Length: 163
Image (cartoon, rainbow, N blue to C red; front, side, top):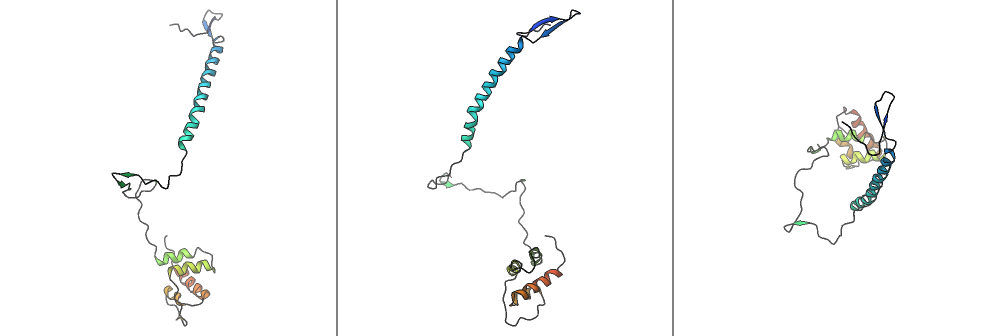
């Protein structure tokens, strides 16, 4: 079977075997490659700005009404799913002990830590507070430094709980 290549030259070696040379075909291949490259660049030059234009977002008109179907506004119904597609379990509320341990992560002897404790047990200062028997009794201490020391004492005694 003989295949003819446009622009190719036939040649023979010393033993009489036929060889093909693409020396003459090279110029025509280069011309085709340049022509195709021009087409590709032209297509990209036309399509790229069109794609960029299609992606531009404009602010919605505030006076425009929201989209409706049959006169009723669109509503999304169903459970919320996370990015993995699984349903998210509602977050368990933390116990008071876990909240106290979370306050331990804040720098010691700072107003922020006291505010964290006060968010758990709202302060109800009494002029003569009795000695604290539980962590909830610390809210009765009037002086902030003493109240912080009281909360720290109970929070330090807690065993490490999982968060």
